Length: 149
Image 1 (cartoon, one colour):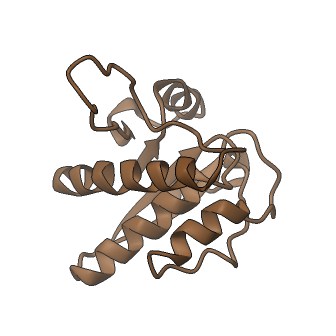
Image 2: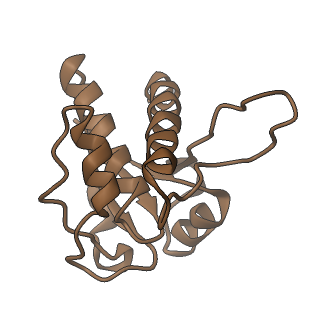
């Protein structure tokens, strides 16, 4: 079993949605992989953002029981791969002693050839459209990630 840890800032939006999407895909495809999530700047026990819960419910995924986890409180040796939402977060994970080759940054598929945004944009505080866009970006990035695991 390959254990994946998705990491974002608050562990209330992007990484819980990524965890849920990844686990749904892994289950549907009978892959020997499982994901959890954590945040680099959060408090243990916070719930997922309401819009994250609602957008995942539209996809048949229940996030209502999610509880945020603060990255330094997570047993890092339990994971084979660490997936961040941007490059800065990957540096933070590396600073905790995780080898660089175990860290991946999710990449948003560019909307056009001029879109140079790296990573997955944080929808925190945004409307349902922002969360839908984030979930769509996560799903396409996770599809690509799974090919590399």
